[in-house]
Amino acid sequence: MVRRFSLTALAIVVTLAIPVALFAQDTTATTKHLREGFWLRFGVGYGTADGSTSGIIEEDLDSDQGPSGFLALGGQLSPIFGLGGGSFAITNSEDDQDAVYGLVAPTLVITPSPTTGFYLQTSIGFLVYRERGPFMDVDGIGWGIGLGAGYDVRVARMLSISPYANFMYGRTGDLEVDGTSVDLQLNGYIFQGGFSLTVH
Image (cartoon, rainbow, N blue to C red; front, side):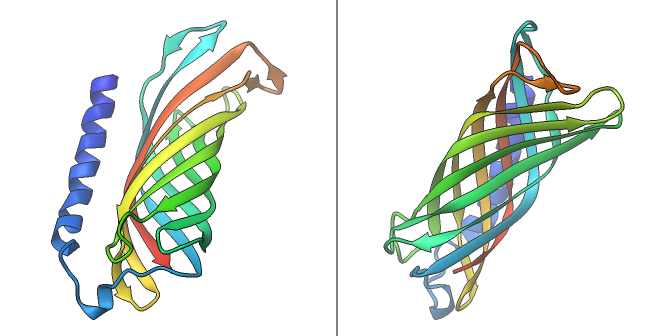
């Protein structure tokens, strides 16, 4: 499971690195990256989730893969620091069971060099797990952290297309299975990558 997760993550990162390498040295007037005021990011892509359970059942879980995305918005505190909030999620459907892994958290965006498109982000908030289907309904919430990176490729004065990669980890409290709380916790590792549309 760990090897499969690592290979998937590596493949996504390599894929995202290609457009970054192509655009990183572009310093034309249309790709200046000075940031100010309000910003909004809407990202779509693909993700993978691995994890384990603890409590009455302790076992590693099979890897889940599926569409992923995020929505984040906020404002610039300075040309280097931006502060906002975001919701990050990956979905998976198997055997008519639909699952969503997510992180809802305040998000700090750091631009080490304000004149380039590269940025880092970090989030601390709530890990959310929700599963629905004919076999069982499961809900869980707990704490979660996230780290991410991307590169804004300016395509208009206030618009960028941004390849990104995000990693999240968290742990739920006791899960609710069919409405009943049980001594079972989920530890989740989530990776997502793709492209976002950024207004800033």
